[in-house]
Amino acid sequence: MLKIPFLNFTPMHTAIKSEMQAAFESVYDSYWYIMGEHLTRFEEQYANFSKTRYAVGVSNGLDALTLALKALNIGAGDEVIVPSNTYIASVLAVSHVGAMPIFVEPDKKTYNIDPDKIPAAITARTKAIMPVHLYGQACEMTAIMDIAQQHGLYVVEDNAQAHGAAFNGKDTGSWGHVNGISFYPGKNLGAIGDAGAVTTSDETLAEQVRMLRNYGSKIKYENEVIGYNMRLDELQAALLSVKLRHLEEWTRQRQQIAAWYDEALAGIGDLILPFTHPNATHVYHLYVVRTPHRNTLQQYLKDNGIGTLIHYPIPPHLQQAYAHLGYQQGDFPIAEELAETCLSLPLWIGMVREDVKNISNVIKGYGKPRV
Ligand SMILES: *Cc1c(COP(=O)(O)O)cnc(C)c1O
Image 1 (spheres, helix red, strand yellow):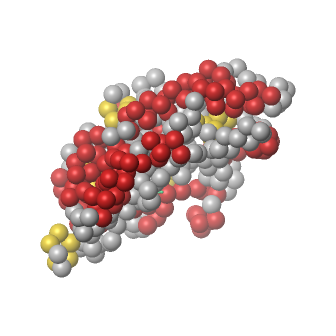
Image 2 (cartoon, protein in one colour):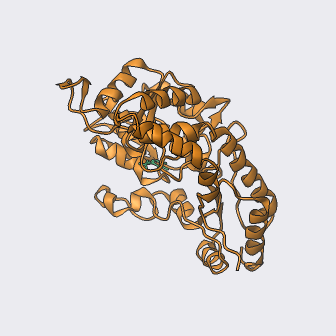
Image 3 (tube, protein in one colour):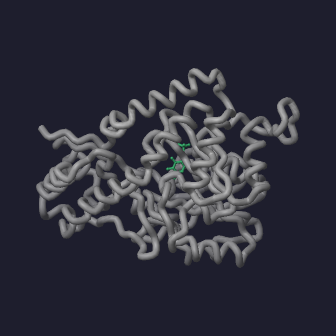
């Protein structure tokens, strides 16, 4: 039987293995493993890639967002606006600094936070808006920045899924005052373990994040603030530098695979395909389709050797971790509908047109009256 996993690192990691091994050896033989030249080099390269003045390497994406909020002095008594359909990490970062997440529904077509619904959620306590470029599509950043400016709010982009996407030609991760990215292995730029970064063009904020990630210290054994150990180590930085050289090519491949899906899946029953805002680019961290028959379609694909995942099955407001906020089913109907109907199809570097054809044929064979 045909077997196509949801994610397969083999082609990508085989192709770059010798480059990665050289990077490993360079760190291993340097005898310097934390806060050294590989980190500095990667930070310069990533800042250059994201078109920001600074990139500060940190331990992971959740910590990047937490440090971004912390650097802005957001904490107890403050509110931060987040989309109601995001990955839990965006919301956790808000909670970890002691602030309150305020959910705003996404646009039903792009799945990104709906700028028109943001003003109604703003109160005297609102400090920031955290747009999330979900699945790899840039949010409507022009409108979001305008709203933030009118109300004197910060913007913190959660750019964990959209390395290299853009809105109106300006890159994600370069709009907000201070922004977080993840280099979790499965992200478009993935480490060989946990890693993340904060991007900003504000020197003071970059300095603050650098201090906070390293025990609140600029000079060894002198601690200015109560910081954390949330550093990016030399090994991950060196490996990320190798992968960064390939990222643009990989993004083109992702967009090609998505285009093949768009063509092969067009007009099948009630299947809803991804929609890209005309001013946005999409780097397809995920290729997400929707159907009311999601669960049975997923099972059918599984029975036919095709791996899929659901991003995400339970919206943050209905998670047990946030039960104390008192939300109920029906409070954010768009997020709830997306959670019940979305399905992420296989998309990985090295997939060929034949794979997309085979997957699409299985979907077509699922049963015409249903999908
Ligand atoms: C992956 C992800 C994060 C968290 O990144 P980690 O590196 O896994 O901590 C945050 N937000 C979104 C939208 C993500 O997809």
